[in-house]
Length: 209
Image (cartoon, rainbow, N blue to C red):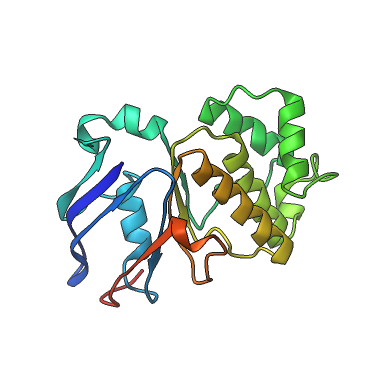
């Protein structure tokens, strides 16, 4: 279980989060809503350990994350709105690097199959900078196919995706939840998942995103 309690976050003279708390259980998705400036990305970065809160605590499996950073990050996959795909590398080269960083130990055939499943068959050797925005985004989303992480933290994962890719991503998230995984995400779109698995929190518009 992921547990967030008493979370405060300030940026300059703006207070983004004010005593926020929630829990996320296996098999569940939490959709973080809010206007631009409400602190959605800041919240996700705090949960991912990339940003320190002003106050409050993030716990994983009943223990503060700060006491088990290595173990926690081994069970976490964070995809920001900047997907980290390197434009001067081909699609398959990006996946090879991700494979190493994730410790997935996938062979070449598995990497090619991941690109095919995500809709990039025939684009394996194309430089990422030559891909469309949606195709570029799909390269980053391949990490969801490779990762064994229990907790997915996704910032606007549906951005720049066409209808087919949105359905594919939704199916990947659904399968992750069915395996007992957890997902924390922000999106301006409706989450195309079964309602029983999905809960929401809405952040107030008190600062810049």
